[in-house]
Image 1 (cartoon, rainbow, N blue to C red):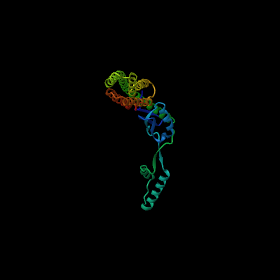
Image 2 (cartoon, helix red, strand yellow; image 1 turned 90 degrees about the vertical axis):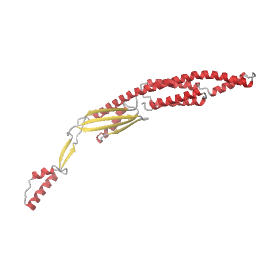
Image 3 (cartoon, rainbow, N blue to C red; image 1 turned 90 degrees about the horizontal axis):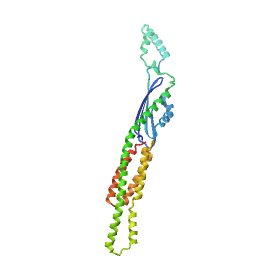
Image 4 (cartoon, helix red, strand yellow; image 1 turned 30 degrees about the vertical axis):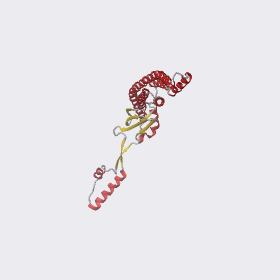
Length: 293
């Protein structure tokens, strides 16, 4: 069993970049992948999503991919020589005409190197041949790490669900035993009251008919049988090696429906108390199931 809450991280390198991937996931009805990455990776988005789907099947997954350049190997200096040549020529001409001074080109160029208008540091138009494979490897590794953390938390959830299932099973068994005793006692008390009220002249056939009708109205054997079936199915799902969150969620709804029916059909305070306890346990199970993949 796996939770939908997890975290995974990975670090890979390509020719020009160091690639870091962080992958966080929380519960969600379906697989909802949210990608955050630099524009350089836009063309790889589809294959990134497909790589994640190979490992994770449910949950809201937030993926953060960052690229860090390895040194300055991907940068180049661009000199605007035409502008610099024009400026040097004009400055020398004006200096001679206005001040009768000669200015060397070297002294002018030295000052121009500090001006961004004449010198740019730009990205090289190069091809990183293994960027895609490195990114996919990092995404896959982060997804596997995320899945491992899901499995670790899922083990804890499985233990909690198993314990609460056992509590429900015990309560159903107690209710079944109580109902058998209660029906026998109810029949005895019902017959005694009729005899006390009508005397010895009691139509046994009519008595049995009326008794059967009353017992039928409060009969919860069918609901208890269905609860046992649901609990057996729950045990099978808890032991399954596949995503079972949706199936467990549906099963809990069915259990809750059976318990509500038991409560509405029964008047004994012992059954009412048992119903309250069972509904509390089912709610605990439901809260845990919301985070199961």
